[in-house]
Figure 1 (cartoon, rainbow, N blue to C red):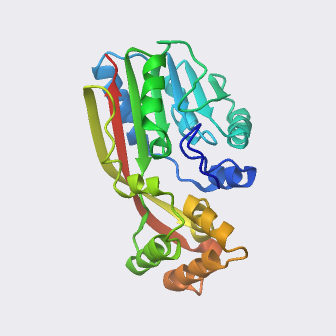
Figure 2: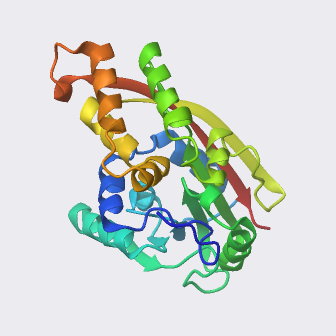
Figure 3: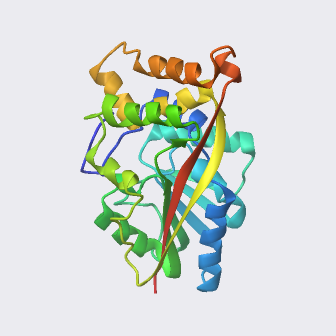
Length: 272
């Protein structure tokens, strides 16, 4: 877990072990996100030839868009994350997807060559001024910039949700990077650079088995920092045991279902 304000503003997910956890347990986005971005592009006369997904990580958001464009390019600063993405790409047999090392300051594409630049679950880690400038350089006229993310998880079971909120806000207090606040407030402090801009908000519901939910929490940057400060900690195991007790201790953890929802927020903006 490192913070580096010189290349990407924050470099938090670069270790190979974290890349594996991130790839395995992070939630995927519902189809509605893709539909809203496509709708915005179409109604504003944009194109669907080439897109770039910045801060692509293990490629979840890159593959998510792969069927919509002739060429899809994932860009990340972490070699470990890109290794995971390329392995997954082979498994999924995408022939139109490629991955590149790059950052918010430097992406390896020609001027005005890209129809869409996306950033999923990453805008709050970037240097906004650098990102907007570099995205503006590579976007075609009428090209679209889209940033989207899911917010803090809300468990359907009220007492379980209280346990997770306590873990997030109190157990991990002091371990979150300052810019995590932008997830807490659903990107409401961000404004994309072009006049023609829109925002979309909705909730998505999903379920995970309890061990998978534990895996998801283990991918949180705040938890990773906590583990650095407290080697050998059992706080996540303790949380899992508490959730197990609330959801049905007479059932094996592997069979316990955790129902939850996430707020989804999308910012889109078209270059003139």
